[in-house]
Length: 510
Image (cartoon, rainbow, N blue to C red):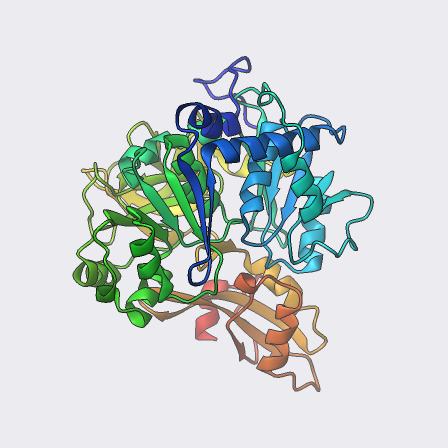
């Protein structure tokens, strides 16, 4: 694990859940903290006092299980309010929350449980009666969580230190299996620069986030950031329809709206944004994918509202952005947020920051309080991302004289699928298991300037005639939906280096 940051000490007492809830429960107990909006008139709310009480009740229930501090609590739930409460309940108890996607297949979920050494798995409404496949782990369902919320709460939040582990998030890496990114409680405090410089977030705001709760973008920007500022969070758990978002903005008087660029594009295509009163909306924010100048201009023209983009990753969240203090420059995600130490390092050689305008690896200084503690049980991969005093995540970029960043792609083969990083190794590992596949290479395929899809290039096994539908179904049964290829192309051979390695960047020419 990385050493303690220079501006934090092991004696620095800080609990992320307390930071987001305790003061709000004292100062504004009756203010609405969370709005869960469903279809039609279905609206459920929690005040800060209710959220604080429920979180401390869950924390007490988890503590009473006899778990050691730092034990992992895996959350395997859908888009329901209890997801948020269990997440903060784990932090409140001094445990480590492990958010997971409901899209994960049973085998993918089993890998996370085993790799993380999860002691507890919390399942939601869709899995509440299915206790198979969890081994000897403690499994808590909706009934158990309801009892904890109603039971005696912890009198106070656990006395954790800023550097104590708080969350474990799995993301695709360069291997065939996801890797765990371990964050400390201080990471919540490390988000403060984005409140002012990207979100423009204050106590009076209402943040509507379009993501699902398992995603760090949603847990962070959609819940943690509003609560850290005393603002109201709005999440949606109704049918997924792009046309619903303008009406939700109008109905809940949202002042901020967060989504990925592809959803903004779908809203413009499928919704009549002029039919709803968007007067409350100050601006939208976007992350996860590059925001094209064309989409930025189209949204401005249709709504009259700005969009502020940010660049981030699971290891540090967002650290480059446009926003109220950094004017938008089309084609750039913005500038490093004030207080962040960001540099461009050469791909090879000593880790000395490069001059303005030169392309290299985008790096963040290890003193950054939002930086991860490290990769869970992956010392080799952890060592690979550290260059002296700098963390490098694999993005190629340049900074101009005014500090604006230009993204130049990846230095590795990681793909971006609707805001999620996906390893081609993981997808290839699934496809090669099909008896009709002799060789396979996976890469991104650009279908237009601002949209790429995951594509598989397959050499059929001799004397087989496996087709695209069969391979797509094979993947759907073994991979979360966002990891699955959208198209399969059959080729006679894959482009390889003299050493036999597949050249993924040349697959589109195969």
